[in-house]
Amino acid sequence: MNTRRMRRIAARRERHSSRSTAVSVALVLVALGGAYLGTECVLAAVGAQPLLAAPADLVRLAVEDEPRRLGIAAVLAVLGIIALVLALTLGGRPRHRVERESVTVIVDDEVLASGLSRAAADSAGVPRQQVRTSVSRNRAAVRVTPVSGRAVAQSAVAQAVASAVTAVGARPVIRSRVQVAEEGVIPR
Amino acid sequence: MIPGRVTVTARALTSTFAALAADELGVRRRDVRAQVSDSRGRLRVRIDTPITLAPHGDGESERSAGPSVTDLIDRLRERLTDEGGAMTGSTVGEVQLHITDARIDQPRRVS
Image 1: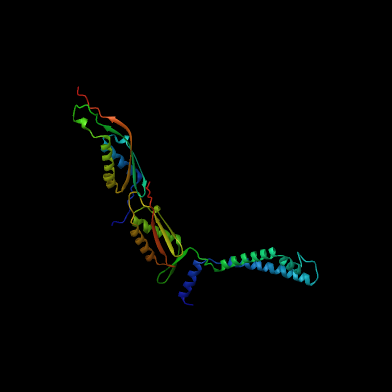
Image 2: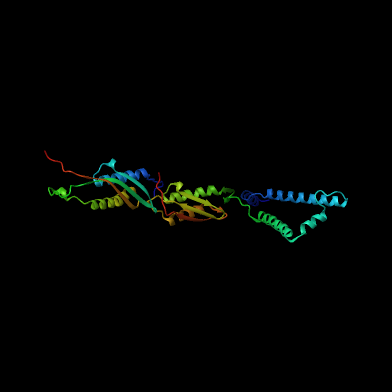
């Protein structure tokens, strides 16, 4: 296996969470249900007392009247939807890939956010704690609170942040947006 | 641009504005209180100060032709906005003046 492929797989493993817990829970539930039904069937076949109800009675109970049928259908539908959501959502972790010549670095989104905050603060001339950045899969939202009496040029900060994003070159690609608050604060 | 950051703290701002006001009105620095806050991204300056007025209408000397209260206030507001803004590197958006006391500046009697 070539190293490039290995790097890709390793990066993917780091950036996505495992779904084995959900799979295990689902399998255990199915196995328990199957075991119970099997037991009842065997008991009925040898003519012994049923544990709870004989298979024939179970079927009759389940389809006896309309509301009960609908109820059972609804429960099954909800379980199915839960399973589908677990299976189809990305299971992504808040991380990005940064690829350099021979290595792939996995960076937590918090780290990216603090780097972008720093770039924005330096460009806007405000203390670091007056910048809040949140990074999601393909978006970075930067919010700058100016110092009262010192206007912040939104476009300059946006440019500084955009070039910081480009310089890092994280994958998946991040698009940044800079917002300057209307109200300022005065540093203590 | 030189890398680095300048932070002007609230304390520095209030001292500057209070000193300016005291100088403009000719009152003691410790009688003047200044506060700064935000006014939609610009600086709001609040000054609590006494004022000193020239005695009015005794017709005795040129001192009686002192500026009126409104003149004093206008000049003070202007100076705080322009000079104060320049000194602190801030845009002053609002000046609130609270005149806490007025003193009549009695001409010294020559004995």
